[in-house]
Length: 420
Image (cartoon, rainbow, N blue to C red; front, top):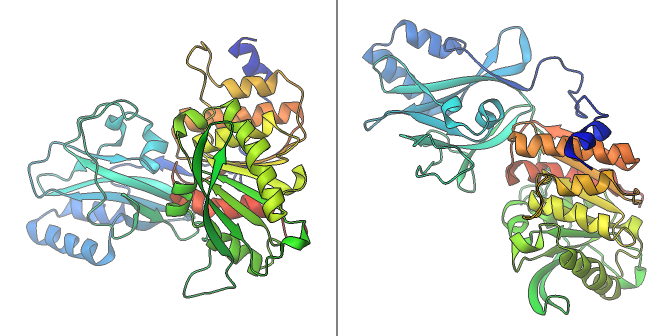
């Protein structure tokens, strides 16, 4: 089946399935040079004293500069800033809202210099539910963002908020994180580090197994959550703390989770039948026998982000007799085998085969580049056209664990809930 014919087949859902699906105005747009009220005042009087006072304000408040939009309470002016302390030819915002507006060409995300001052700036109008990560790249090479680049972006020195190696922004209406914290403790489950020897691969991989507070194997009806990319989720998405908080708040019933380490991430997570078989015929049966969890497909969830979202969907597509539920966070549905001339291989498989009895909970960031955002929309459309049970949301953020950390709880509550 040709790709154009497939596109016609799956083009059923023309609007976003998000809380703002019917909102005419997009979640973010580029702004004009005078839209920031504070920058407009500085432009009118850019003398040395005024600039010095401006930087003092920013040091106290931090960057980016956030200001209300008159008459639009759901939006803010968001201004990225760079103070040039060395010769500077350009400054580029990398990722976040800049990618959502400007795509993969850094020339679309360059800051402007305010006259002959040391102030460089760029303003966007952003809906207040935004949360994202970004970096700044002074004297950028302006090479496309998806190819090899000589530039070395860095965290924003004016922003104290970090998420890994990137700076982060969370506006006032952004979704709240769900995990338990030391300042708000709840009963904690147990995390056991172990390993698993795979006959399929002939190798050993690391696992982390979460069991809920009061876990009793004799109970024998625990839901099972299989989380791909254990290292990344352990570092950036605290799955155990999220599960503790959801269980304590009665948003989820007790469940068992296994976080699966990678041996060769690229090979395993790109629609590998061997990896899907390992998950379905080795790992899940072991979890059933050892922890009495995931006895039926309805009680078994496979979850992943980016390539992990692709792999989770493929595993359920290959083995619906094991995986009845999928969580896909910004899945990499652009993928195709190297020898295949057409993109979006898994979408094409879904569109041309009978539906499996699988429930899919998907999300993707509105700020993600087209290769990610648009392919998620088409994958959703293919599932919907075949009659799959699909929920889909576009969060106001980018391709980052910063967003997936907040997003995971919503998926799990939807698929499992407190009554299962």
